[in-house]
Picture 1: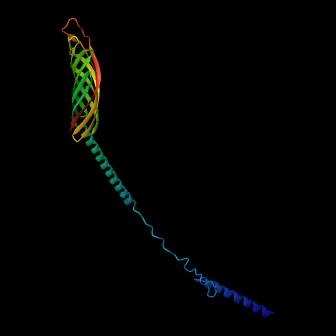
Picture 2: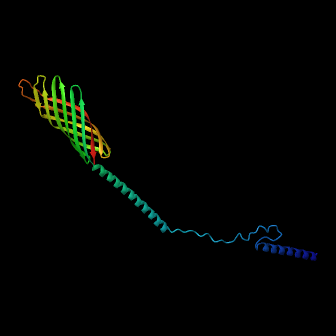
Picture 3: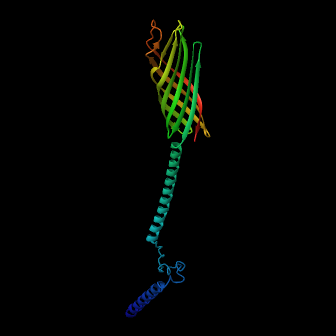
Length: 250
C-alpha cells in the first residue's frame, strides 16, 4: 500500500513537469510540432513598424503662392477695367467730337397751293443750330397769298451711326403779299411763329441719309395796303412738311 501511494505520486509529478515543458516551449515562436497548430504562427504579429512619415507643408509658402495668384488676378482685372474704360472714353469722345453738316428740303404741291422748305444745319458736340426758309403760295376764294419766312432752329442729336435729332424752330423774319380778287395788294412783314421738327439719320462712311418732319405755326399782323377802301386784319396759318436730305459727318 505504501509503495502504491509513492508510485502514484511519482506518476503525477512526472505528468505535471511534461505539461509545463510543452507550455513553455509553445510560446517561443509557435506551437509544438505534431500538435496540428504549427502552421498558425504568431511570432511576427507583434513586430514593430515605424510609422509613415507625415508630409509637412510650409504654410508660409502656400500663403505666398495664393497671394501671388490674387495679385496676378487683380492686376489682370485692373487692366481689363482700364481697357474697357479707355474704349468707352474713346467712343464717347469720338461721338461727342463729331461735326455734322446737313442740308434738307421738302416740297408739297396741290391744285391750289405749293409749299417748299430748305434747311441748313451744323451740329457740333450733339448741339445743332440751323436756318430754314419756308415759302408758300396758295389761292383762297380768288385771293392769292405769297409768303416767305425765315426760321432759326436749335436741336440736340441722339446716337452715333443711327441718329435722332429733335429740335425747336422760331420764325425770325417774314414777308407776306396778298393779291385780292379785285387786284389790290396787301403787304406785311410783322410775323410771329414757332414750331418743332424731328430728323432720323443713318451714316454711310462720312455721309448721312436724312429724313424728317417740320411743323410751323405763324401769324402775320399789321397788314398794310395803299387802298383806303380796303382793310385786312391778319393772316394766320400752320402746317407740316416732310423733308429729306444728306449730310457729312467728321
